[in-house]
Image (tube, rainbow over all chains, first blue to last red):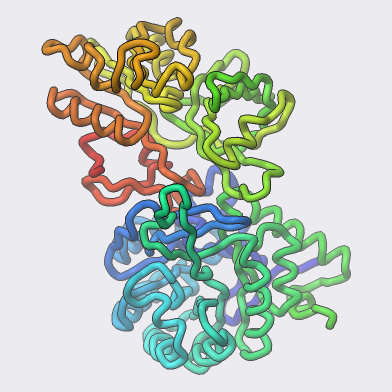
Length: 303
Length: 256
């Protein structure tokens, strides 16, 4: 009998499959296609203290086996989330995490403190890795001391599970992971998007209004997998793997490399029900290969 | 309610050099589809194509469980769709987006399309006719070589055509057609879809004449269901998703 539940320490998931922030809205966008409560967790769209309009159109370009985006954290802000959106989604029987972003440490702290009060939100994912905003975002996550500072400040006010989402746009992601672990993070999730760009050769204009954007999709998976493997060896806290996961075997690779759970992002755009197929596929793989718990599967790569 | 269904391609007809009309059939009954809504089609087995392609719904036949999609070959994804052979299976996410609003009783709409943007106007005209309003179409093309088969439009109502080189119909752009130059226009509401520059000119005309104008945008998008926030259009209320709050917008609402 396979047990798919995952204990991340004060954060229990019924299975290891979550949806990545910015690819699943607030869950309700997908409710026509799947039972949201069947998921291990959903991580809602990056939320900031004040509403943000995001970057100008065009914000997206398809690239080989992937896509670039430059949405720039468009969201309705903390107040609207707490008062309008949260009451609509809190009944989902899944772990609902809020991805928290900001331009300043004070913004992160104020947002995290307010979300700490929401009973149906057992954890936040601190986004110190968004590549598409001019201030804050990735700037916090590409330097050990600034990553430490923002996590340490949020840790003081946020009492539940604190997951920190890391940027791959660094020389050594393991040392950033160690910094946020030392600052009090309960887990790390990686990777956010890789900074990239594309040009329309006919018009000689960049495909994105911001010129550069974040690359996601199957093309980033080998990079993400390598980083997850490096980070699991460097920290003691759980690692949540994401980056190009489109099927069960992709997810299993991340767990064999040491991830405790995974997030599915871009693949939701192509198949809104892909997460359910991944959950079923993991279960099938485990029973076929004699794994009974997620702890057995985690890090079970043969070297 | 939106659905993901596998459809079978039952006909693939060439309407112009780079435009095909795909007729897709569902095994089960179609949900209610409003004019102006679109589908997101998965493009299988095509290197370099990962995301679904948003295509407006050209026509609906409820008794046969069929929808028609007019597809212009503008890249790898649409090229693969245009080449599909009868019998192929297409995975379709639908019906998506907001519809063209039905005009008030007594209003006389003009449906203005440009190029492949004429696609959603056929089903819109059919819906109008079902509501007792005879549609009138003004369709603009570059030249005879890009002209789309307009017989199906003529079956519903009057069709006026412009071409930039004058090879068919009136020479010029849609806004140069005599019907748009009359001091006493015989229409009072405009529905438009086509190149943005054309829709802007049409919206300007509507504004000058105090008419309502509904424009259908075709912004690049990924999810089609309001999750990725990639397809936004600037409006008087900020950035709005073309996929859920559009693709049809009142032109007064747009800041373009």
